[in-house]
Length: 382
View 1 (cartoon, rainbow, N blue to C red):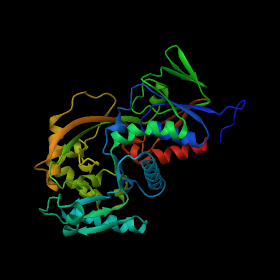
View 2: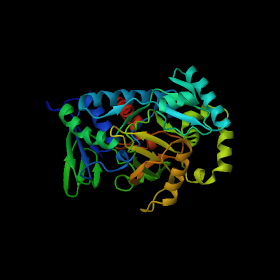
View 3: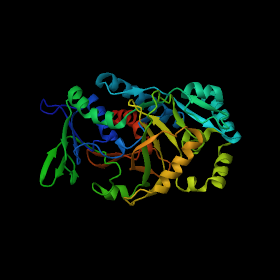
View 4: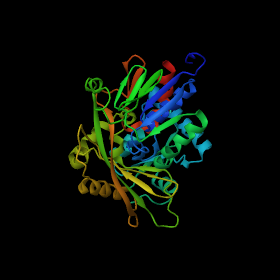
């Protein structure tokens, strides 16, 4: 608990109102800080609202990260219960259409169940019971169902979190103002300054504005992904569990527990080089309105073209059709997101930039899954 100065509550400023910044503000408030969040946009518009909305423990390796994901899921549920935003504990369904994919799923079931995870192999018939007949039955061998995954609509949830923080924790927000400099105990917006005992910089993919010399010393890069959202006009359009094709097996760290995964990845390199080269794996989540979010690709660099590639979206759709019935789906939106990613195997960045000034970043594509738990852990150590 922070010390009170002259009878006043200790203060904190968080720079950035994406999920990492919002989670950090919550954690600081629980530790007794009076928090102000400063966000350069009028509302969150970055990676935090440009994702699947998946709270995805199944993709996290056992230990710290898996436990962190489960804790984050609990927090999401608590907040949803207080704010009323939609969520669904849909679980996830990883599908196999080839013997090597099925072998990987069999190995994962054995490993994950030894670790105490809630997974089970299901037959082709079992897949159709879970997925409400949206899965393509041709050559389907079965799937691995995990019951730990949850879906929210990130646009709705991230939109409601600020008012919840304000009402429950007394968090103040300064919107549409860009922090131009930070020093111990003070942030600057042009010539205007704001003081706080602790400052946390949660700037996402912006490495250039604040403490660029610190970021330049990190093994951190940016990742651009392309995604789409669809409407299915069918009357009964729920898909059950979130769906994942075989390519997702070579994307998530936790699946490296399968000994045959390297052989599967080598087959993909030979047969699906465009997918491997563009970092494409294909997943589907569904929000409360029945809209379907589909993606995604992964391209790494520091500066990206603002123009999305039709070829990438077509590759995603072509692969999607191998495991989902999409004939009547109608495209609503397409977009890209950019998030920070560590290149040295680290799962986050937490460093002290100045006395009382901290940078929290680098959670990669798992911000929705890990941020609440991570922020609790880190702020608890201050």
